[in-house]
Length: 494
Image (cartoon, rainbow, N blue to C red; front, side):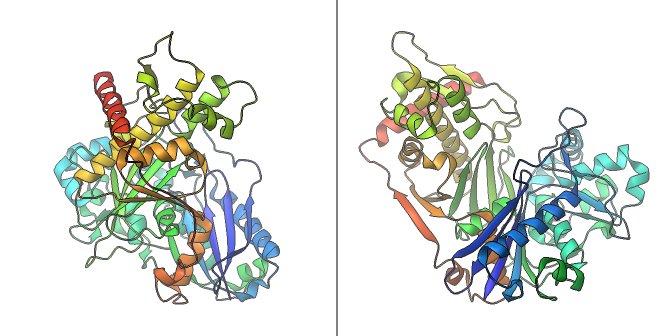
């Protein structure tokens, strides 16, 4: 018996086949083999053709099934993970009306900012838990103003995962978690937000039917099943945005549990058990995959833009020619904690929500020409990234999330011993690294939604822990002192 997980990213689309009994991945594939194109007609714009996602996914599914060497008809359920905050609009014939405005498109920022002010900051934060910002609702408002004739033809709006599911099943449905990431969900009144819909002048009929995150959300049509080599009626039983799904992949479901990623940008995603918010709106809160009104499980998302991109810049421009990342990590490890007074503020990759949407350049502080060299810059960069994580985690702590354990995939920045030790040292949290990815998490989510797994604990019993990093008590004071210096420099630079 097998499960299929699909992960719709902006750079590629992945598919994984998981064997139910062992929990092991038996086949995976992804398309395109080079990074998927993003259309940028104007500065700050970012669009993709939803039809391309569907084409990539079909190829990835066929490749994953072939790699698994199974009959696709043995797949019992399908799960979908997808890039968050994108907007797909279709007409009454379910035809896409325009390219999708994806997560990194910034054209809608003014619409969200005006909504935040007009509806009222307290009203937005206490009911929606976020500023409408640059999320899906604001992107739809841009279409309404600049493409009014097209707006009048819209039958339904969808997130990227909703669109892919529609292509598989013919059904247009969504989830509370998905609506919350678009800033359409009112948590206090447990309904689509009247404030947002009325302010922007949207009709409630634009919203797709709502299904539970773990439930039958539609079944493969005969034509799609035939094309993919699968069984007609195979159900989609789970869908979630990429960050909630990453947390599920790491079995992060309960209050106080934390999932983190450290790619080009970095994310810390913590689960809160109470409706709470940051009054300065420096983090975003969405319905987690296991959210219910009776047991609110809210995903508090901290995003830091300048993470792996800073480390890669150091590798290209500071490290000796030909040095790989492993050697760069070794170089950074030759310098003591605190980089002998050198600090780097890693904020050079766009506006930082954590800094109240300020766009500031990356900056180096405390540089001494007689002391500091390439190794100091390498370590200060990694420590600066860690300290930005710590700064954001302090905000989450103010919201009632106590961080004791941080779970992450064994990839990207978490491959660096310096990064891992510094993060454990400055936060006092244990770091656990696992062998998993979004497509595998989606497959196991499908198993939960289909009732094949009786609980998340059963679904993730086979989750393989690669490493566990305990805080080094002997270095804790050194890390905390270095962080305070970094934090003071951040405040002065703000």
